[in-house]
Amino acid sequence: MAGQGSAGNVIAAICNIFFPGLGQLVQGRILPAIIFAIICVGGYALWWLIVPAVIAGACHIFSIIDAATYKNNN
Figure 1 (cartoon, helix red, strand yellow):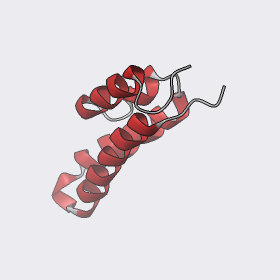
Figure 2 (cartoon, one colour; figure 1 turned 180 degrees about the horizontal axis):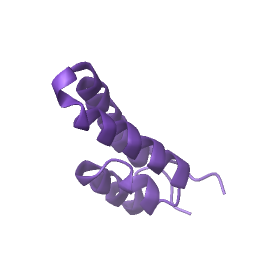
Figure 3 (cartoon, one colour; figure 1 turned 135 degrees about the vertical axis):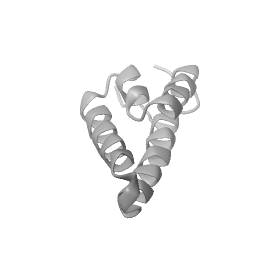
Figure 4 (tube, one colour; figure 1 turned 45 degrees about the vertical axis):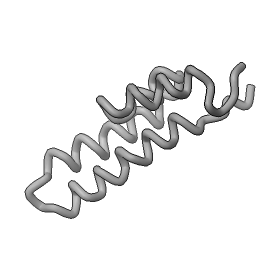
């Protein structure tokens, strides 16, 4: 399996730009995909409270980085 920086990780990171957690789903990691999606969508839905939106933005950026740097240990 390809390691960090592989084409699969780049595609997953690009997927996460459009929808948080989608890149993890593309990589086959269902639980992180659900967690990133819930935190980001929930935080963006509560944008008027400011703090949840900031947390969601940070989580969104982290989901992109997580997908781009993921190493499969199999």
